[in-house]
Each structure stands twice: as structure tokens, then as C-alpha cells.
Length: 543
Image 1 (cartoon, one colour):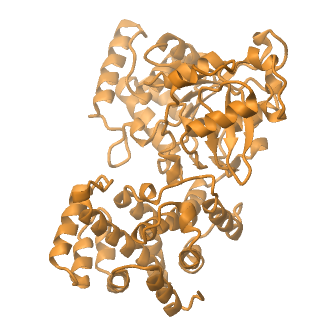
Image 2: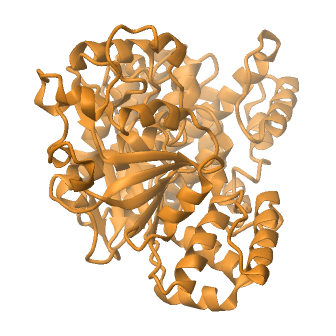
Image 3: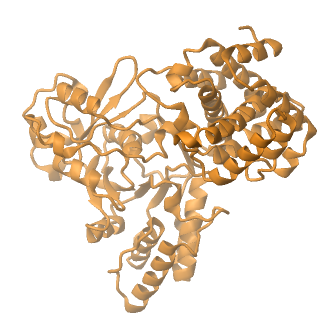
């Protein structure tokens, strides 16, 4: 089961390519295994990793056991880092990273032997040299090599960060058989089977994996384990079902084999990975003494929870901090409620208050007290946390992460796509609390802040401020109707509650929720921190 990751992960894969043309003007040598061996690292963590220092013969280095699809910034700050730590324990677990379209990562890292620098951004920045990526291939350019890696018996795992849309699922979360890429791949797959060829190149990740699995099946090679690390609820199950659906349309024998043998665990991942910038490249060059074309930065907090169904033959991820759990959904629920819910609430209240970043919001004591009260009084009682998670400690860690001055995270960005986020982050908490007779006043304020945010963005359209949301047209239409009903909170709230993509009909008709939302919506008119402070005092929270 995938996380809904902190929004600053930027869908886990957002990339900003460093200006290589500018980097080429550097007088420093380019980072590589050879240049590192001629450089005395002043920071031990920036020396060539021990598992790569077995001499000049690179054939003596660990072999490739993992293929990763989608080598974006999040992968390099997260899965590749965990594997880097695991390689210190031994094993042939280096990574063949495969870009499905762009050559940017390959262009940057291939001259560097896959090496890059990871900067961990806290009060004091620390640096690590990551050596787990052995090669970066580009599927359209290196298709035979990609297929060879995927079909090699040595490849035991395929991990993925390809974003939700990369799975080609429909609204029901199952493989979209009408998706243009899937239609193409099914037709190509059938032609290859009929002609006993394997030359056609799939357009989709699903098609690529099934093609590789078909070749493994034919060669009597066990299937690799597939691990989705994307922002997709119940990701392992949805990935396996998509692969099975594709196989069933192509080869019933293959589908039956996959049903019996394919392992696809649910996962949850979490870490903030901001985009690379010039300041980072300059800092890395200063510390490393070499030019790194594409270093990565992230916060210190890093979490990876994997459903405990992996075979014994696995990288030593557990020793690197990976949590193996029988129920990943419990971790996802904890993250959605303890991290994502206050994150979204902060975003909408913060934008209304004219606050720019998460760090800036954390400098407002009244707002912080409200968010903490929301979590402690209305969110924490709403769910049963997994036994492995200390809720109080986890929640405290989240607020400490929000306070990190090194991570510039715009509230306006976090506020994107609210119509998709609220039904996962806040609405279920309200439903659970109503069912149990628990309070919802602060949760209603969070929803009301989103409604007011929509109205604000509607009023800013003439200034070129865009509402970023898949339902933007529908939301702006509701905001326009609200503008015609100015100073009629009950009518405006009723208009928002007609958005059944956000508000389930049963909830929209619940008089307790409607009353709480109306009160909160009214209180947020001309929002100022003093207004929020007054609401807190009315709710018995000391300010």
C-alpha cells in the first residue's frame, strides 16, 4: 500500500535537471570511480563506498540484482539510499536504473559510474556518496539491454517510482484496457507470441514487465519480486492485479503462473526530496572537490514500510531501517491522518493568512497550537495505530520535520489537488468521529478553510493565479455561485456540499457535519490569526 507521501516529494518523482551546459564550465574533474580514487575525501561518507573499493577490477564489485523503473529524485534519495546501506552488509544488490522516457538522469550519472551525492538537509547539512546505482539505461534507447536485465536470473527485484498515472489504471483502480499504451502493448504482445519474437518495445511499464515475465516463464526462470513505491493506495495489490489482467488478455498460461508465484508487496514510503538547485551543486563541489552533475537532497527523516511477504533472498534493507509489517494499511492510515491531514490543514489556513511556506507557518504559535490540538483531540482518537508505531513520538517527529528551515516547502503547492486529497486525508476522519460520537469542530474548520481557499483562488483568476486541481472548472463554478450569494454562509456551504466527488452524499446530509461546517465557514470570513486564536479559546485551547 503506497503512501500518500508528503506533498513536497512532488509525486515522488519530480525532477529538475541541473543545467549541464553550465556545469561543464567547472574546472573540477567530474565525479567517477577513477577520479574518486585519486582524491582524498575529507569526509569519510564522501569516499568511494567500501563495497566498490575491491580494486581496479570492477568485475569484483557487487553484481546487479535490482532493476528500478523511474530513477527520479525520490528514488535516489530513498530506495537507492536504503540499498546503498544494505550493500554494506554484502550481496549482489546493485541497481540497474531504467528511465522509461527521458535520458536526463542517464546523461548525468553515466559519466559518473552511477555515483552521486546525497545531501541530508537539517540544521547542519551532511553528505553521503551513494554507490548503489550501477548503471542508468533509457528504455527507448537501450531496449535490448533493459530487457536483458529484466530477464536475467540474477535480477531478483524490480522496484518502481513511475507516478500513479504510470500504472495505466482507471477510476476503479484496475488496469485500463482502453488506455492507448495498453492497447498498443497488448497488440504487440500478441504479435510477438504468434511470431515467437520479442523485438517489439512496450510503451507502458505494465507491458514492459509482462513482456519480461513472459520471457522468464518461457526460460523457466522464476519471476522477480515487483515492489511499487508510488503514491498509490494498496499499491502492491493494484500492481499485481494490473499485471495479471494484462497477462490474462495475452497468455492464460502466463497468468496462471503469475497468480501462483508473483510476489508484489504493498509499501509505504516517506521523505521530503526537494529539487536540486545551484546552491546544492556548489556546496557539493566544495565538499567533494569534484563536479557532481546531479546531486540530490532530502530531509533526514526517511521511512520505508514493506509488507512482510518478501522471500528470504533479499537485500539487507531491514538493517538499513526498513520496517517489515504484516499490515501496511495501518501505517498508511497513520501517515494519512497524522501527517497528511495536518499538512493540508496548514496549507489552506496558511494561504488564507498570507503565509508562504511550511517553515513560516511553524513560526506562528497560534496556528501551531491549533494544528497540534487538531491532531491530539480529533485525529489521534480516530484510528488504531499499528503496534510497531509510537503515535506520540511519530506525531512529534512530524512537527519537527515541519520546522526544518532547510526545506523550503510552499503552502500553495501543498494546497494543490484538494478535491483529491481531502477524501483521503480528512473526510474519513470526520466520518469515523461522527460514527463514534467524537468531536469534529476542528476537522470542520480544516474543510471550511479549503472552501474559503477555493473562493480565494476564484477571486484571483483575473490576476493570473491558477487553481491547480483536476476539478478546477467545477470548483470555480461553485465559487462563482457562492459569490452571487455573498454573506449567506448556509447557502455557500450547501453549494460546496453538492460536490459529491469530495463529499459522500451521506456525509453531506448529516446535520451534525453541516452545522459544524457552517459554523467553521462563517468563522473564517476575513480570516486573521486573531480569529483563529478566538476559536481556539472558545474550544478551550490555551493561546
